[in-house]
Length: 221
Ligand code: GRF
Image (cartoon, rainbow, N blue to C red; front, side, top):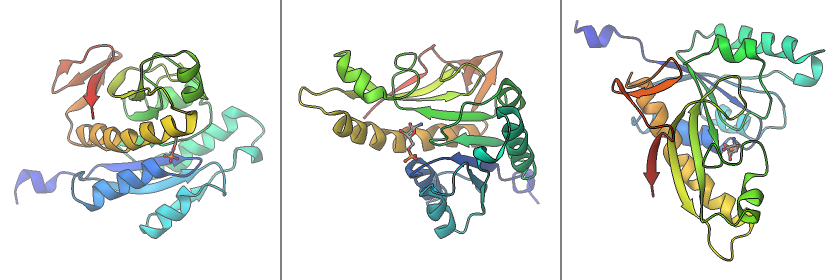
């Protein structure tokens, strides 16, 4: 047997809270063979998340861990860690997971947890990014994939999709164009990680062993 065939296929656990369109993009990329990996589990903090149905349809195990049932953020995160580690994933993917994570959690998954955020970080951390981009009259907006650290939306950036802001853009219209780009760049970054090309060393993102610039790799649609 070749050494390659003995290697493990990377296992992924995905955390969601909502529609799960980024989860769908990942499911599709794996189904198409673009990414060689398995999604072992999709966890949502709410039973209402539409993404759960997407996972079910793809035959992926799901689990709801409702944050409201826990007395503290810490207790919730400990339960999350328990559920995630049970699957021994190489990578944890945050895909619209709308909970602030404790330092204990982010450190536990240091260098093996990615997030996508709908802005050109470090601009517009937090919520309502599209409204704020239009209000600030920026010419360019977009989305960023980054490694997760304990600074909210502040971890080292891997890849950014740049989306021009047009004169007549409403937040909803702009969000739709940004989301379409999210579905392109998130699978690319996850593929790089699964292939062992993307790593984090002392808070510097390395691609094929070479440091990326602070803004990550630009992706122009
Ligand atoms: C995306 O805009 C993502 O950037 C943000 O939350 C949204 C999730 O959308 N973190 P979906 O659930 O993947 O459709």
